[in-house]
Image (cartoon, helix red, strand yellow):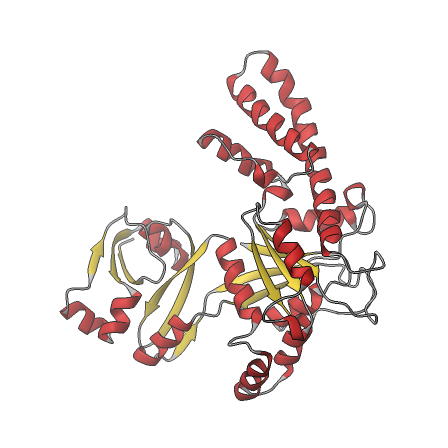
Length: 364
């Protein structure tokens, strides 16, 4: 599962990517600096794994990760191939969620492609290009499905009805994610269309250092604009975050954060939000060899969770042994949680909860 960073050129995408991944994507004050999409595998900050490490004292620790993709800056006309249009629209399509970076700071030394700072216009520029590309794909699909629908084919009629609703929505300059599937068939179809504007989105307002805590007038404008979108808005001073990552020690970073009025790097908040946006959650395995956070889709069953460790675990699944994270920490160890009756044995139908500490029994 991948989240793609999108935005106009020079809004801070590559600098943000560097902060998140510590991969040094090229960052420069001109458009199209990032041509090939950079992919960073980013650890998901989670205080729970630190607590488990403290209790279990394992030989090694493995955190959950999320893939972040840095995509080239998008410009007007991208849907028609302007700039690097076709290439980066393809890169966005391959992502499962979108992190949309908006420039919300004034700085005469950093060129804005449209001449002045206006996050509302910038957002609309991106939205329109993505909507136009989706509209093109929807209309192509409609050409094919219309013929089948006229012959009385029920599946084609269902698809046509949904495509008609999506087309109408896009023509109103609204994104496909605002179209609610009416039933399971439509949900499956919607997923199969792979529309860019159907992907969940998170807005990152890139602000100056002094606005990192409370935001500014530009952030207020963005919040007002997206209030009906069911999308999270995160404030981040990307320049300050870049400075923090350059500091050598944890203590130096904490002093920097305190001076800014923050308790943790904004990048950590963003990574967790991206993880949630991708509908991912974590379960843990905790033993003396390793404490590890495993990433699964929200709603995964115990066998599916076991399969993330190894496919044989899913094929030969017998049962899952489960202790909630809260119980594990409260009693201080697996043995004491068992003594207190907080150890559960679950079967194939069990839906894994975020934070479960698990062992699997299997037979292949």
